[in-house]
Each structure stands twice: as C-alpha cells, then as structure tokens.
Length: 534
Image (cartoon, rainbow, N blue to C red; front, side, top):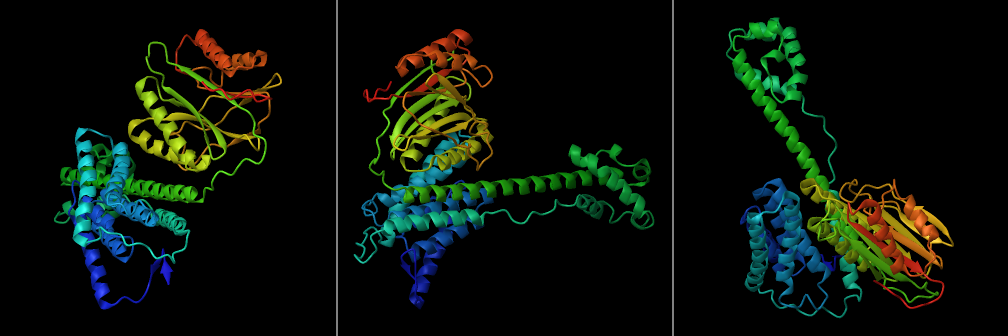
C-alpha cells in the first residue's frame, strides 16, 4: 500500500530502531529550544528527505514541542515542522529540491513565516526582531549541518516509473494534510463555566477546618451560611474581588475568622477568573490555528487546481484604464493605493484605503494590494483571496487596531462579465448611454469583518461604451455622492484620464482636501483605439 508515494510494508526490526532514533532525535531537538523557538528541530526535519525518517522526526519534534514548551509556542513550533514537511513533499520532484540550498532555505523560510505572523500579532520590538532573526538563521544553518551528519545532502534521481503528475499529487496531499491539521484544532464540546461555589469550598477548607464554630456554620446553620455565600457571588464576580459589605450582617458578625475568610475568598476569586481567562484564550488560539491551517490548505489546493489560462475563443472587449490619487491637505503621502493588472485571462482593478492618512496608512494599503495581487496572479479565486486577507488583517487589528478598505473588480473581457467585491469601500458607478448605475456594498473594512467571510459579489454584464468609476471615501461617501452621479450623467467625453482628473478636482473643491482622494476608471470603448493606461 502507498500513501503520499511512500510504500508501507511491515518494517524490519532494524528499520523500527532507525525510525525510533529519528523520532527520539526530533523529540530532544525540540527540547533544545531558544526563547520558545525550536530551530534545531526545524533543521532536523528539513534535513531529512520526505519519507518515513522525516515523518518520524516530525512526530517526535511535534511531541517534544508540547512537552517542553507552553501551549502557544508549542503550536507555533509544531506548525513550523508541519509546514517544512509539506513544502519539501510538494517540491520533491522539482529541480529546486536537488539544490543544496533548498532545504536550509525552506527551514529558515518556514520558521520566519510562522514566527513573523505571531510576532505581528503580539507586537514587534528590537528584542523580538533579534530573536526572530536568530531563530531563522539558526534553522537554516542547523539544517545544513544536520544534513551533513545524516549524509542526506545528495538527492538520488527518482525512478522513471513515477507518475508524471506526482508534483500535483503531492500538492493535493499537502493541501489535505493542512486541512486535516486544521480540523484537529476544532473546539471540543462546549463545557459549562466552572461553578463559582468552588470559591467558597476551597476558602472554607483553608479557614474553617480548625474553627471552633465549624459545626455551627456548616451543620446547624448550613442554610444560612449557604445563602450568605450565594447572595455575595454576583457582586464579587462582577467586581473581581470580595468586600465585607457583600456578605449578610448576621453571617459576618458570627464568623470569628471573617478577615481571614475574606482574604481566602479573594485568592480563590482571582484563581477562578484566571482559569476562565486561560480557557477563553486557549479556545481562541485553537480557533485561530484551525482557521490558519484550513485557509492555507485551501490556498494550496486552489493554486494546484488552477488551470493554465486558455486562449481567448471570443472577441475581447477593448479597454482603457486611468487612475490617480492625491494626499490629504498637509500630508506628503497618500494613504490610498490602487493598481490594475491582467491574470489568467482576467482584468483586475484594485483600490485600498488604509486607516487614517500618511505613511502608515499607505504602508497598510500597499501591503494589502500587493498580497492580493500575488494571490490572484497565482490563480486563487477572488473570494478565497479576500477571505485570507480579511483573516490576516483580523489578526493584526487585534494588536494594532489596523484595517483597510478593499475595492476589487474582476472583469472577464471575453465573456463580458464583471464581479465587484467591497470590504467597507465607497460606492462604484457605471455609466452607459447617459444612465448611471450606483453599486454599493454592505461589508465592513477588512480587519473588522468577521473572520471566514467575504463580501458578496455584485455581478453585472460588461458592455461597449461603458465607464466604470471606483473611488475612495475621500472623494465621496455613500451619504453625499449625488454630485458624482450628476457629474457622470453629464459627462460627454471619451478619455478616462480627463474624467479621473475632473472627479479628483471636483472632490477637492467640495471637501477642501479633508482626506486622501483616489479614483480608478475603466473605459470600454466600442472600437479598438489602443490600450491606454495612466
């Protein structure tokens, strides 16, 4: 039987010992951690050729992560090891895998990718950057020396009997492995909150054990004691600590060790609240890890399944694109970013408005467009690309409070169909034969929208003699945009560059530069006049 092109047979005793040795090596390599990072284990897994030895080292390393590290760092370490094995398995049949630098670079790249994602979530300072750089470099260097030690630097040529689509099969198996790993982090059956009565049980066990009135309070007057504790519970949980006034006078005056009991109750209240916070954080980390691995598996599967762009069989619409942007008054840099490109037979127009204005807003919006373009160029569907970007920005916004709008047009000029996706973006306008159509979305900006969702696509036909105008909210928002519709309705020209400049100039006159202003215009002329872009 074969799984992932690995022949499974009953192993001999010597092979069992060898696999156990690789597993033990991975386990203790994870124990050689550096500030919660496992560069030695990453180097060891990357040094092994994909197969039984690497799987044994991976299993041992993952087990070692959870034994030697806290849960959060252990998740990161195990994620790095799984990602290394997935990449090496996917590229095993390529010429890159045969290069001596490939596996060290894979080890370093996987460590950098996973650790950087968590570093961005938790905040980056100089010390964390130094630790991140040291862990990345060590992962690659240790991979090289582990390969020399294991004598796995030379890669034998695979047998010609392998199926020609083995790389595609490995990508498919890698995607399935990542999805399965994500499903393994599914939340367990919901449990009831820990009963607050444990606070008083543990406090009484400490204070009341040797008290002379123990029999009176906990036997003869049990109902009165129980009611006193029960009545105080909502107040102390809401406040986070107990005060003497929370308890009935008859109980407080009867208790001869009341100050000690109050102190013990506060200790147990703090412990209970910390346990609840830990469980919530653990559930959140599980959900985040599940979403990340599932999304990564989906992206790998889509990239594998994306067909080569077929030759156009119909007549393609002619198109001209013009775009422009201006910064907020007093700023030297515009926080909006916009671009357009062709990919897989599709035409894409993108506009992103970063939170605020200036350099930081531009950095966020440029990063968003750059990643989206890379996803779309790789053949990822717009829905999955947007869902991934929203999830990533959700992680960043938890720590940095950052978000961006996304306005994406996907236009198939051969089938003459367009789809518009909006994350918190301003309206888009389509003009044809003197009629203006306004398209608006209802989703929040990326980073604020609920993770795992994407905006609903607004689909419409593409026709000759049509202008499509996308703007940022510095030009007009969904409340005060009638002037944009009136301007388009009265526009008689055919040059999208002139229209874009006119819209930006009119926006400045109306709003006096109170925000960044950007516009991108697609014109579909009736006859081919030559493509023109600005």
